[in-house]
Amino acid sequence: MTDLVLVAVSDSSAAFAAAEVAVECAARLHAPLHALSVLGSGELDEPLDGVDHLNLVRDEAASAALRHVATLCAAADVACTGIRRRGNVAAQILQYAHEAGATVIVMACVDRPGRTLPYVGSETLRVLEFATVPVLVVPVHRDSRRRTSLSR
Image (tube, rainbow, N blue to C red; front, side, top):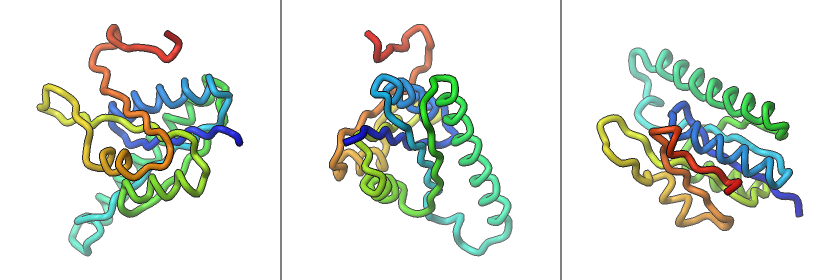
């Protein structure tokens, strides 16, 4: 069986930290990486004034996050595939992990402005609860001097 690393990404600094760890993991495993960006369903899907613009901004942010991961993969010589989905975030991550045959899922802690400590968000908790493969939850790195490496 071939290893496959799946990383869930958004345009947050926490997700970028998770992407860095996922790329390093894929490089060490000599495995391809799939970057998945899920645009959650919710109030922005309702027909309201300005929703089309907000959805366009969300789509652009997802595309930018996937391009960022592709750049990280290219620098590390890791094969990368970017995937975009819509719907329930945790359900889409779990479904895609199953469909693609992921051997590990990499996700980030939530990084909310104003919070002193990052926490595991509800979507990550759902993935942790229902995943059939290991889930690596990457803490938010606020100071690059405190970063750790998988190479230790």
